Image (cartoon, rainbow, N blue to C red; front, side, top):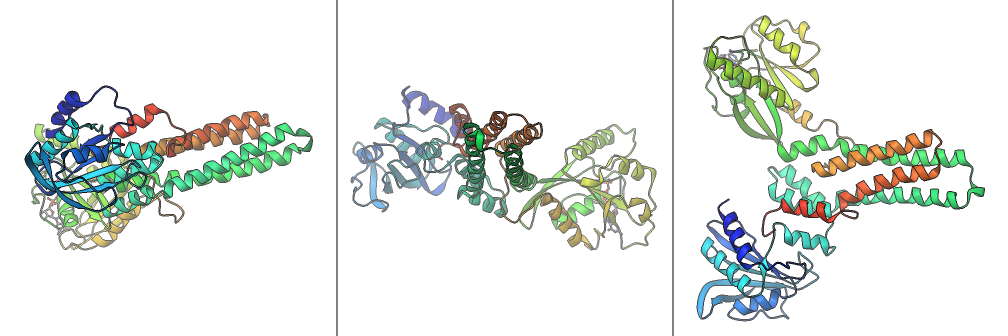
Length: 468
Ligand SMILES: Nc1nc2c(ncn2[C@@H]2O[C@H](COP(=O)(O)OP(=O)(O)OP(=O)(O)O)[C@@H](O)[C@H]2O)c(=O)[nH]1
Ligand SMILES: [Mg+2]
């Protein structure tokens, strides 16, 4: 990005080596470009002092969270007319003293004000450093911090809602509760180790097994929401495939409700993959129309067919289009052989024509009879696509885990709990069960940030944008 180099330069020139957490940091918090308003944000002990060095009228300490009108000055020269706000610790985004200067949203004004902040005691913020400080100061936990980025990147209202719920701590609360229950199990087992005379071993093993299994089921339910969570975040990749002339491009156009791809009676019209996005009730769908899959000696067509096959392999859901006005051809049959009924919907197109297709040969698949030409049967197809996006989710909590890091850790925790129940089944000592439980506790703690290394924290926040 254009301004990355600019930031690098400023970081190199202005930052002194000891950029520790006590430093006051500054960054442009809004996107660089032309806009009505732009914001420069400062956070740290000296945020107010630094801001006051460049403002025409010092921000009144006794007017926290109030917008105050003034000018930014460089010496005696007015840089911009601004509104500034002081948010004292601990009730600010970072939990530190924060000042935000709202200036005109032009690149020059923002860069000049940032440069003034840097020459007056602030250091350039690293990517995500404001949110990182909020985490380190205990304002939010790690899942909430990560959700901030998901809010910024949300591509649909549903993804936004999901990220907001995580940001408000719903996921953390669930995970913390389950982690707490695991700690209780350990406390109980440790008591049994300390006072073995009270112990009836079989009862302890069976109770512990049940309690661990209950927690494991809840974690597995959270894990199962990952399928939908990832789709809501990144979109569902849907490939439209089939032999030439069955109406793939017509279907794409009908789903998009616009004439995007060329449609013609000539077999082999589409030569390349055409990708478009739609939202189906808040679920982002990435649709790919492909070249008709068939055997050909034509060099260009061959490349197209290869691309169709690779789109097919990378798709999460396949719409295999068949021409229902004809009997199945050998090309149809060859294609059906390589498709997985679990992630394929058959689209029996051209239902406005006399029907010839042998439906009894297609019973292993879910199929929909449509006419792309007359826009008939598309509602049912659309709801099946949407249903696929939500498949695998259980419970009615409405939380979808969408972060790959969280999903990996949930998977690890489930495995550790599986190990714990195996350990119990093998009647191994309580100590061995405790080791497995501690592993699960560590994995869950890494999700919320209760048990996480600096290295991981740095890695997470490095993916943020500067100013957030
Ligand atoms: N009657 C009828 N004709 C259709 C329907 N859908 C598509 N067609 C016709 O079928 C022909 C092929 O349509 P396309 O959408 O170009 O088919 P395609 O599968 O994309 O073809 P290639 O790109 O060549 O692989 C065109 O003449 C369309 O008008 C339908 O539902 N009913
Ligand atoms: Mg086509």
